[in-house]
Image (cartoon, rainbow, N blue to C red; front, side, top):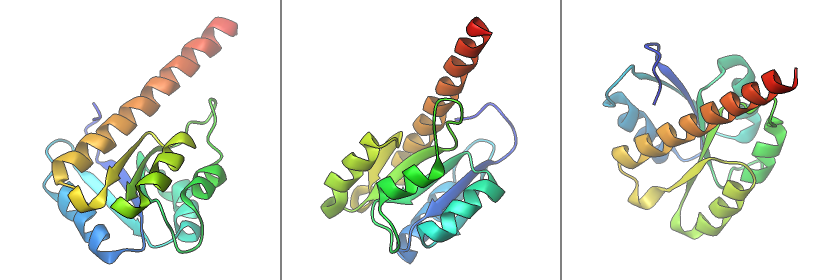
Amino acid sequence: MSDAQSPIRLLAVDADDDRQAQYRAAFAVAPGPGFTVLPADCGGMGLPLVQTFRPDCVIVAAALPDMTGPGFIERLGRNDANPGPALVIAATPQEEAAALEVLGAGAEDFVVTDRLSPAQLLRAVGRAIEIVALRRQVNEARHAANG
């Protein structure tokens, strides 16, 4: 997922305590450099933490108590120059259509929570982080070619 030896910083924006426990458990046993997982129970709490905690990846529930998944992504202000953290959407089977909408709005991957294994979560986070790293490389190469 990352070549760096420092822990991978994850922000889990999800009001469901059971899923928060599931995220912590999955990353507690993950191989590699380790993970630091910070929970947030709503978008209003998660957005400022993106700025202060500077996560490598944000796992965000498709439905938050105070905003929609696309609304959360829009408020992050991600663009080519600032791809921000990687995003993985966590959705229940009933929210799968909403997760696909959020995926179209800029998330890198999504997981369905009722079938979620630690390995699936790790793969989704790893892919999301790699996609954002590739976007940064492309943007830097484009900038170097034009500048």
